[in-house]
Length: 190
Image (tube, rainbow, N blue to C red; front, side, top):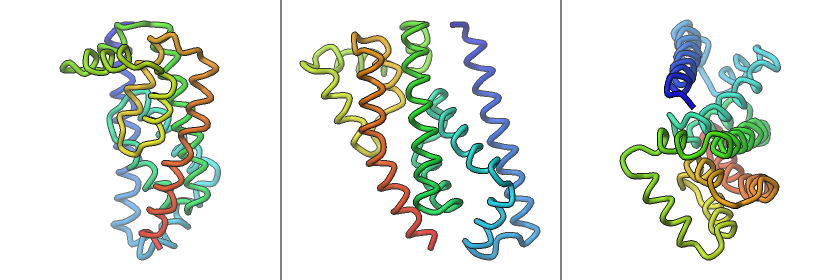
């Protein structure tokens, strides 16, 4: 995969994020957000576009790991409450994880080494190679908060882990951490 595609995708994600932040700053400076409820009402004014944008952002932040995923989880919980935020985040992060796996499966170590800068590839590839059961290691890693899940999704695409097993690990392992973030951040937002 050409480096320019990764760079263009990164620039596009940063541009969309900056545009979204500028929209929020404009609304905030105009007095739109005097409480969490007014912020939620503002976001819901965008209709289905708001949760779709959050899900797309979460998928993109896995594929192009620029920001930690828990920031999107926090934003989702504040914007849509714990349940709505959970679903947007779960769908987006799961989709992004599967896309990252499939990209690595299709383009190989070239794309993974591009994303794993400064020896991270060697470190994580070595851990994966030493693991007696990579699937169990991957499932445990997905369950843990603040673990480098995005990198492991790419790395998993280079292993013998089947696509079906990977998807099962993501779908069964991802919700617990996202649930904890969603309910925790929604309590802060209340």
